[in-house]
Length: 235
Image 1: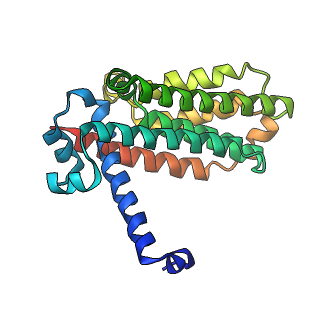
Image 2: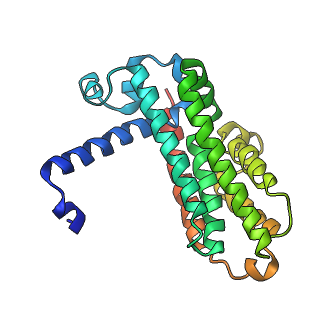
């Protein structure tokens, strides 16, 4: 047990465990809504994909609409965390470059276009929360590339291209149909895309300095989770 856990009261520990489980159940829906519209899912479908009973469901959620709202909270928190990591100017620029890639990939995995469409239809207010958090993330990402150009680390390419490239490319390649039609593997494509990002943005002397191990390990974890998610999302 960590020092933090030792210092937490039993009530606080139960509260943390409650939130962890709730997030775990919400996360189980993410691969599902890459293939099915959340608005079309029945409560029976939701509890089946969460792999819990209805009794357990009602311990954590009051309704299907509550699932949508708490799912939006999770997405917004992820976008804000991504912006914070990339915007941390106390971190070395090359580490922030890797964070920019990894957070962009994470967002592509967990913010599918189908989710945005569902939220927009089900609750325009929630949809605006997601879009605002997404805009803040994109603005932070663009600022980071602007700083890198000013510091002489990046090639002088328009920073908005980094945002657009990640948005368009990463969303497409997370689609299993896209991969199968082109006889591609997700792992190799992500590795190649990361290499492309390095040589597209980093000046040669900085590209040679970067340690690729953290990104390689991150890609391996994403691919593993993604493959499990595809499997679990099948009827």
